[in-house]
Image (cartoon, rainbow, N blue to C red):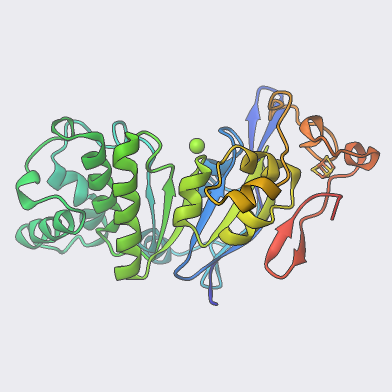
Length: 317
Ligand code: SF4
Ligand code: MG
C-alpha cells in the first residue's frame, strides 16, 4: 500500500487569552492511496482542526504533513502551492452555510476552475459544470439556480461537485452528512463511495456517527481531546477495540450479530468531557476511564503499534 498523506507529530495550538488550547496535540498517522480513513470522536476533540491543518487552511504549530513524500510544511513555490491546493479538497459539514447564497450553482461549482484554470473559456467552464452536476446526481438545469432553491441533500451534492471540479486526488469530508436528514444520509454516502470507486479518490472522512463510519471506512482513527488514541482497520476496531475510550464508544453502537453482541465487553462512559483548555495530566482520558492506574495520572501513554497495523495509546498495552 502506497502512503498518500503522512502526518507526523502534527500540532495545532490556539492561543486563548493567556492559555494554550492544544486542539491537535502531537498526532501521527498515514493515509493510504485509495482508502477511506474515518476519523471519529466527540465534538471539540480536534477532528476538524486536523483536517484544516492538513490542508494548510490552518498553519501547523509543529510537525509535518507529507503528500506523496513532499513536505507541505516546507516553503513551497506559489506554483507548487496551487498544485497541492488542487489535489486536496474539502467537503464541509454544513451545506447551508458553506454555499454563498448570492452565487448561482454555476458560479459555486466553477469556483476552483476559475482559480486553477484561468484560461478556460466560459463555454468550456459551463460544460464542465454541467458534467459535474450530472456526476453528483443533479442536472444542467440546476446551474442557473441559487442554493436556497435546493434541499439539504442537494446542497451537499453541489458542495461535492465543487470539490471535484479540479480533479482532486484526496478529499477531506468534514462531517458531510451530519446536518442531513437520516433518510438522505445514506444517499450522500453512497454517492461518495461511487465517486471514490470511479475516480480512485482517497478520503479522510470525519464523523461522530460510528455506524456510518464503519460502513464507509477501510480504517478508523479515534480521537480524544486533541490526541489520537486508536487506529486500525474497521473490522478490527469493531471486533477488538483496545482503548477504553473506543470500547465505550462502541458500547453505544448496536451490533446486529447477537453472538458478538453478547460477548462484548461494555464500558459506559462516566463524567463529563474535560475542558480542552485544561486537559488532565498524564492520559487525558483518565478522568473517565474505569481502568485507570496510578501511572495514568503521571505519564502520557505513548502512541504504539501493538499489533500489525493496530495503533493505540494506553498504558494497558
Ligand atoms: Fe485508561 Fe490509563 Fe489507558 Fe488512559 S492510559 S485509557 S487512563 S488505562
Ligand atoms: Mg468539527
